[in-house]
Image 1 (cartoon, helix red, strand yellow):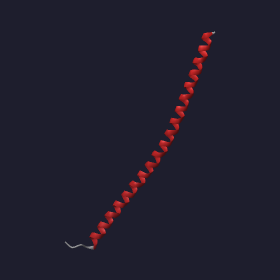
Image 2 (cartoon, one colour; image 1 turned 90 degrees about the horizontal axis):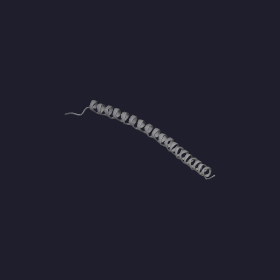
Image 3 (cartoon, rainbow, N blue to C red; image 1 turned 30 degrees about the vertical axis):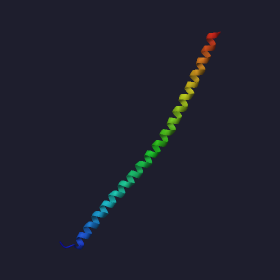
Image 4 (cartoon, rainbow, N blue to C red; image 1 turned 45 degrees about the vertical axis):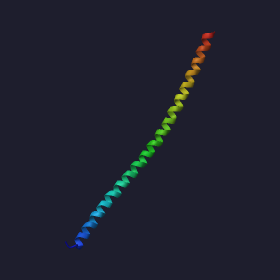
Length: 74
């Protein structure tokens, strides 16, 4: 079997197409990683807010219990 210029050209085209699709997949993966990072940052902020609100509501609940205890004593 003789190797011709057409075989090299065909292999070159195949490698170029493969490289194109690998690059495109890498761009998509990088984009997805960035979106995931943003979602994680937003989720962390929301979690912190929920924890703060939970603590505040628990503090209010304890304050109300104390008020009712004082009213019952009188």
